[in-house]
Length: 418
Ligand SMILES: Cc1cc2nc3c(=O)[nH]c(=O)nc-3n(C[C@H](O)[C@H](O)[C@H](O)COP(=O)(O)OP(=O)(O)OC[C@H]3O[C@@H](n4cnc5c(N)ncnc54)[C@H](O)[C@@H]3O)c2cc1C
Image (cartoon, rainbow, N blue to C red; front, side, top):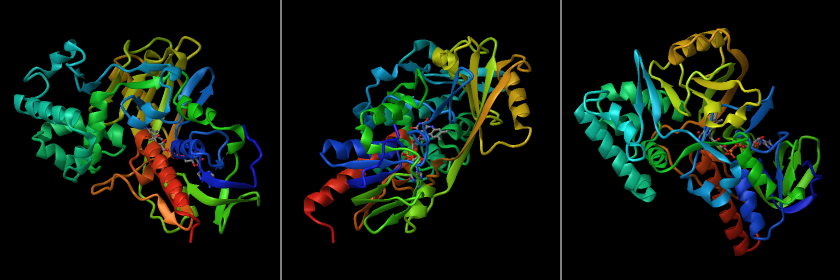
C-alpha cells in the first residue's frame, strides 16, 4: 500500500482518517490528481482495529449508526457485513436492570416504560415528546434550534433532575465522553435523532473495515502511509524524512492537535479521553447484543462484542468490551473487573485481560455554544477538515472532508490563487 509519492499533485491531503479519505474521493471523482499522506502504518486514524490473539480489538469502543447520511452515501454497507445491536440499552440501576428500548420497533420493550416502573408519568410524557420531535424534525430545524448545554435542553424538555441522573447522565457520558452534560444541545438533538432513526451496528471484521473500504476505492499511487508531514511549505509540504512534495492546494485532514501544529492559526479544542478494557470470558455473561450502561457511572458501559459480531473472536470465547472516562490508571483493570462482576452478576476472576486501549483526544470537546460546522478554507491554497471542524462523529468527519473538497473545487473553478 505504501506507494512512492509523486513529487507533484494538484492536491495534497494530510491525513487518511475519514475526513481525508472523503475529501480525496470527491477530488478524485472531479478528475484532480491527489496525494494522501498519513503518518501512520494504516488508514483510518481513530477508526482502527488490531487483530490480536484471534480477537478484533477496536481502538476504543465505537459503533456505526446507519442513519448517517454521509455513511449511506459513501459506503457499501452490505459489504461491511454489519452486525446489529438491539435497539436501545440495558441500564444497570442498582439492584435491577432496566430495558430502555424503542417500543415502536419492539413492543416487548414497553414493559419498563410503563408509568411508575422506571420513570414518573410526567417524565415519560417528556421523553415521548422529546423523542418524537427529534425523530420527526428535519435535521435543518434541529441545527437551527436553541443552542445551550444538553443539561439545559433536557430541563427545557421537561425531563426531571431524577431522570437526568438516572438515565441521561450515565448514558450520554458514553456518547459524548463527558459527564457534565455540557455538550451542545443542537448536537445532542442530532445524535438522538440518528439513534432513533438508525441502527447501531459493527462491521463483522472490526471498525477498521469502514476506512479500509474508503481507501480501497483510491488509486494505489494516491495514498502513501508512514509519511508524516513535518510542516507545510510555500507550495506543498515537507515530510519528516526531508522529502518535499508540491501541490497547488493542501488540505490538512488530521485531528485537531496535529492540525494546529501544521496550521498555527487554528485553536485546539479540548479533547475527550476514553479507555476501553477487553476481556475474554469462557462463556458469554449476557446472551444478547446489547449495550449495558452502568447507572453508577463507575464504568461508562460494557457489552459482549461477540454477541453483536461473533467474528470478533476466533477461539469461541466471548469478547467483553468495557469503557471508562479518561485514561488508564494503575490497578484500574482490577476495579473494572470487580465492577463487571456486579454488572453481569457473575464471577469475572477467571476472565483473561486481553488489552487496554486509551484513546487521548478520542473526540473534540463540543461545549455549548458550539458551531456545527467551521470553515474549511484558510486561504492561499490551504484547507482544513476533520471532525474538529464539524462534529466529533463519523458523520462530522466525512461531511467536513466533503466540504473541504467542495471549497478546493470552487476555488480552482475561480482561477489561479492570489
Ligand atoms: C474511542 C472512540 C469512539 C468513538 N465512537 C464514535 C461513535 O460511536 N460514533 C461516531 O460517529 N463517532 C465516534 N467516534 C469519532 C470518530 O471516530 C471520529 O470523529 C472520526 O474517526 C475522526 O476522523 P478524522 O478524519 O477527522 O480524524 P482522524 O481519524 O484522527 O484522522 C487523522 C489522520 O491524520 C493522520 N496524521 C496526523 N498528523 C499527521 C501528520 N503530521 N502527517 C501525516 N498524517 C498525520 C493520523 O495518522 C490520522 O490517520 C469515536 C472515536 C473514538 C476514538
